[in-house]
Length: 322
Ligand code: HEM
Ligand SMILES: *[C@@H]1O[C@H](CO)[C@@H](O)[C@H](O)[C@H]1NC(C)=O
Image (tube, rainbow, N blue to C red):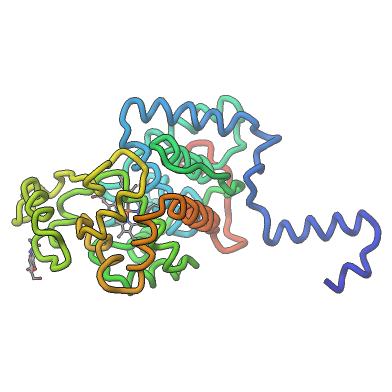
């Protein structure tokens, strides 16, 4: 860089480093190393407790983090309650009666506040909880990019437009992820998180009754708890992974190859299109899936609001500080 030749004192080098880190590198796994050294331990301990009460919570908090990051970046916007005239994201179609785990985030936040009051953002707590959920259910672990700040706004409109729905086709899924600077490879790796957790009948009814790319025996099995006529059984649950729904493994991809994807948006990843080869690779090679998943999770967790957006460290994840 041309500046280097004119920057010889260590003060000057330091200034350049600080400037560049402000522009690009403000997220770092060690962001709270000095200000809250017990953070990761506190999150882990609270997550272990939550998963002992209900293993599915690992899946639910992973999804909550995804739905946070796809709307205004990872900024805790999804956590804001509708109060007074404030309209948050909780009533958006992909979230309402579906996203769960808000109470666990509250619990982690309370525990973190006891040790390090006013320091750690709700967005970062959510990202760590998602990572721990994956790890505690048997998946990989990784260093989470930290230093996100909490938003003072939320966007119901963006939640409705940018969170992908289960009826999307492959081109639409690729476009929805491209809008967040995520590649088709990221899409296919991140979809592998559907190796844990559950879906309600209303989200897979059309696929099991009308889908053409589905194993008939699997469709019949799922029809048993998902009647054709809405709204009957709308909220009945089925595992996204027919084999091991509470274990974070690569069974999701073997299901797709066997045409046992639960959601239409799952099966389109293996339907004669551009992602078929990658799905086969992930089905055969769990280490490749784990490594691509970690890469994609870190990319997703690095999404930030436009610079200059007002932000704060919320004291209560559900409301903007007064
Ligand atoms: C590719 C586009 C995606 C679509 C269309 C989609 C759609 C869905 C739907 C419809 C459900 C069931 C919700 C319900 O019935 O209440 C679900 C569950 C879930 N999704 Fe996705 N999803 C996508 C990507 C992702 C990503 C990127 C992640 C995480 C990185 C993720 C993690 C999860 C998890 C863990 C569950 C289970 C949640 C639970 O059991 O509480 N999904 N998804
Ligand atoms: C199957 O598709 C038709 C035509 O789009 C639709 O009217 C019907 O509701 C679908 N059936 C189910 C069970 O979703």
